[in-house]
Amino acid sequence: MHILVTRPEADAATLAVPLEAMGHRVSLAPMITIDYCAELLELSGSAALIATSRNGLRALTGQGAPLPTRILALPVFVVGPGTAALARSLGFTSVIEGAGTAAGLVPAIVQHQSVEAGPLVHLAGDQLAFDLKGALSCLGYNLRQPIVYRSVAATSLPASVEQDLSRGRIEAVILMSPKSAQTFVNLVKERGLGEKASQCQYICLSAAVAEQLESLQPHGIAVAVQPALDGLLQVVSRLASQAP
Image 1 (cartoon, one colour):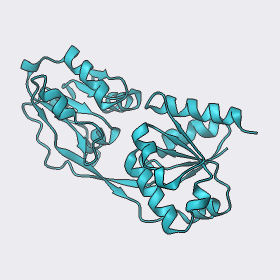
Image 2 (image 1 turned 45 degrees about the vertical axis):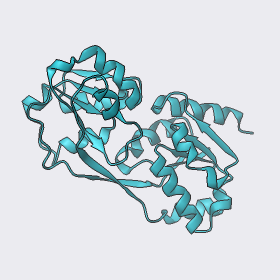
Image 3 (image 1 turned 180 degrees about the horizontal axis):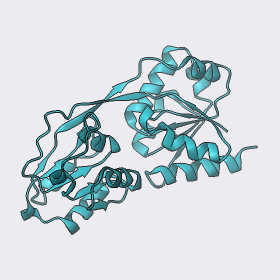
């Protein structure tokens, strides 16, 4: 299949490599760029960190300088294997992996972190799909939630992608966040490509992502059973096996 990957540029290759290894043609059209804003982040007195995205961890690295030992010594709770791998590569030694979503982190935090240990810091983005602060506050935790990165919507499609869509060459589109999905829908409609885009198969990380496609009325939407890279690749494999 010819698959369009809409992840931010920093993560696009993580997805493109296994797709190409499976024999698919991959085009890239990042629907959001990430603006990091953690320069004044205050972590003193924190008992643990929470990262629901790799972007939260990337925001800590600033200009690429190594993280201080006192930061790397903190436990860090992460949503899945990709974020866990990045945390370890940065030097964190106590990495606790949740069940793939922010909501799935709550049981892991309760199991491994006591309320009395001190405040937790969620390295948050400006777009939150789950009220982690509310969920943990109800359990007695003190959660700080500074915004360390923002998602900026793309304002255009790459010319090559626009041409491929207009000629019906793109068969599937992978969408990883509600904002990416809404941005994609807005851009294809602006360029008069809504009808062509509706003929693609959409592979969505979650039901919340798929909901953003309603106005496009696509011919097919598949939602990953597991909100992680492996879950997306399983959907791609299934769709490829059903292709004529």
